[in-house]
Length: 330
Ligand code: ATP
Ligand code: MG
Image (cartoon, rainbow, N blue to C red; front, top):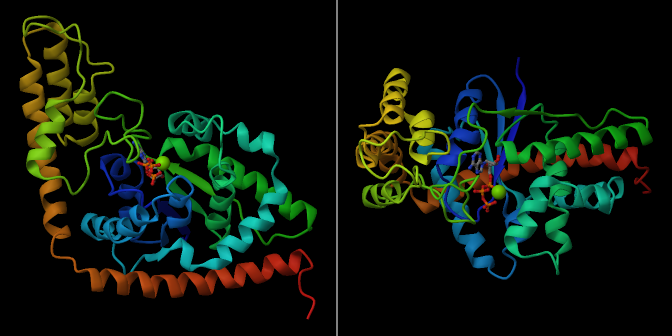
């Protein structure tokens, strides 16, 4: 079945391993038989970077470069830039009517981000409302599947609530509910042991990191603070090195054996970090090599073509929305 798949990333920085396991891996698989739309969410990135728009502008091409480097095929996927599809902004304004302030404030992901950004005392409305603009992104393309990390589940739930409300009030089926698709690693922890690797927290290994940076980040990883001597029994739960080995090491039996050895004692932190270093260097080297020769002009062309295609689809949905809302006077 040809389903519509939509995903997005904020161009607030380059993409990292969390993006890979959380969402990119699914996009690469789904592009074989489905219709993926991949959006560079610059409008959303501005909601907490509006004072530094150059940061967002710079990263639009970097994120696109990451897409191609991991194997997203621009002939199969429509890659586009959010701000250049103004139909999405218009939809967002209409959808704001279908959600209350209390409902937006209840979103656990937004709540955590507000605390993390120190927005408790002066919260920009654009930031609080970004899940509503995500609803526009999802419905504009009649999306069936949204491959996301766990942190995005409350957004999809809200989007589906807005869809149901809209369709009920206007007695229509114009908007479609979407299903999230969460990977086996729904939330990759940060290298600092914080619950999520993220661009904003700068606690991630980026797909474009140099071999030296990768090594240095692995050696700074949080392990087991009580594992002082190699002979001590160690804990694997909450141990970032093992979390990353589980997510990226191909040989599952070897990971199980390493875990058992670490737990009974006799396996040092340096040894497991060296093992992870080999794994991640092997995984990231081809991505970095595919990334390097991609030219700005070619990436811009891909975005330009994709944006034109995306706009055509969004225009059709917007017209249906306007009709349902009786907004066709002339
Ligand atoms: P920012 O810190 O600017 O919000 P981010 O690192 O959270 O950046 P996003 O662009 O917000 O990245 O997220 C894009 C997609 O990648 C989302 O579907 C999100 O759930 C997923 N994702 C991001 N970080 C992780 C992670 N650590 N583990 C799993 N999925 C992730
Ligand atoms: Mg995020």
